[in-house]
Length: 481
Image (cartoon, rainbow, N blue to C red; front, side, top):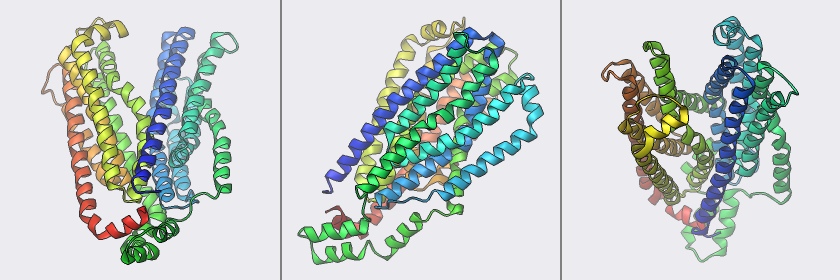
């Protein structure tokens, strides 16, 4: 494959994967909305609130303790595939995932009474759903990382679709009279991640077919074959036959061996990123709930931040396909293609954010009042600021994937934690008396700070690669040919 065709093929794969995942995750969002809508019709207001609280607590937990393993698996497998390996180390990610799950289980057992009485109003069944569902998601997120790393995006989309569809079935069973009560509806949350694993046998079958077809040969063998097939210089042929040089060989070998220390470090820093992101989305609601005497204001703040939550949910599809795509480009020295993928993604995000912000500026208050039924005086400028913050948040997500692809998880986590700390401090400081306005300005400002920090990290990595490129150019040319 020529140097020009390789990035184009990878870009087409990334674009196709992002589109497939967007459909799957968009359908998941619609089915999840249908689940809560059905639940609200078959249960009372109090029971529906407890189901929503159960979902919220579980979502934060699985985002912080399981998504890092998904990212670790996706990055590791994609990097090894780009280097030509057929087998991938799963023992270390599996051990880390099991460690996170056991740590959660230990904490849940210790806090059994508090969770049951203070969070779920004495309904022990909801506590058991929380525990069972969170443990089940360990397997689901491990499967997601494996599927993303192999770029099986159709199966990934099928997994999340099966998850949301099976969860909805429990609420529908109550609606038609096959079951009854809050516990029956809640059980769908625990059963969904297990049902979603029905796609895993299809993934193994596809993987087995690829192995029978011969799979990928080691990168150095392909480089030697292709170098001998074309009119290149003797120095380039020697470089291709010998490999990419001592330092590059050592670096590749280090990356190929995923140690427990390296894997735990990566997962730990990504957990910090996930926790910081949840802080940006939830700290305002929690601080307003703790300091305001108006319960209605808490709901208003939550609803305004849904402007950011909904696009972020959909953007997970792009993030999921972007990480293995960028990792593959990084492993095969596709610096220009790497930068092009980031540039195209950021331009698309900017266009989307501008459209949303203008729409909020024009009709935001009217839409918010009719959508949520709140008789509240929303400010146009404040809603537009949240739209801008949403765009910056999405841009930060893309730049974060670039940092993870370059194995800069620690530096990226520092950027996220700093932005989250600044936002939390802002929300606790009465610099702006109106708490909704404080939330709108604080979210946009924190997202802007985060984007600036991650952009600086991205540019630093690009300059480092640019300086290193001349020394590895002959090898890259030989391999590309």
